[in-house]
Image (tube, rainbow, N blue to C red):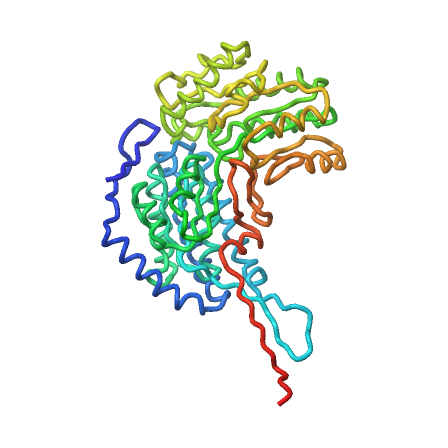
Length: 462
């Protein structure tokens, strides 16, 4: 039995039995049979069905938003944003599928007809996390189906009901029976499904140890493996930055979703000319958050996913302060913040360095460290001093300087004057312990298909 323990009050919000061996075997057989018919449909026909499924999810908004609050703690005031992002990504990937999946035809060669087609892989296994449960899952589910694949979804125990919502939407859309399966699985069952060669591609979003487990399970299967893992995403505020804009956006980038975002801003480097003013503005804005019950419309910062996660962040803060850093937020000003609970006040820490866990290890919580730098070169060196590389940002009015800095920073996505955003028209990818592979954009379709070449000699001289 799998339980979702709500961070709101510690109650059991949802409980589901694990799939049986018979359930898994039946899912594998029915998916193979359904995929054989699905792959021969046109992209337009697949798109019509997927569009109906997207609209079915959106029609559940009033049920989904409070469910998210109960399951993972995001305030209801921000629930609609998850669905808006889900819709943006899904509709974009449906819209570009025809062009992305079209045959590639080389320059004409007399006497021959040649082309490269995009063949579906078979069964794509999506293993989705709880922090953005619709956004992360849709990154692979809709493109996989559009490319002609069947899909298995294993959602995180913290967001059990999200998988069920996807299943309901596909049923309402008339997706062929057997093509999509929402499976409630243990870690061992997940590993066995992969190691047994029952799926053809794994799209995993989660922790670095989780990614290593995926690689171990897939060893020797020669299957595709997409991994979106950890992050310690940096931002650099240059001396010419628009200070107010940088403060406003970076506070949001650090603390939205209680800092529980793969691409959330976790470390900030500020040019010494702006440092004092930036920190003052950042701290003042952070103090305006309202920490409380996520079901309350007035709440702007909900609990972290569980007490263990909150205690890890508290430990990072305590370790930094003991090493000489300064924590600027008085936790007592946030009435709901309390040790031993998932409710934790946001925290801003200065006087930090790269010997501290808070600047090196992924926090995945409502805390950010801020350092002063004297030059672009110093900022770049510090930004690159990490095992992670998901996103990074620069805040400047000089586009040429931003491009030069971006060329030096080791990251999957580089922003100028924005952060913590995923554009579905661009490749979503990371380096180092942030993972490998790619979702979204036309490039994402390359990871959900395999190329097959046709080489016909049509002039034999007969």
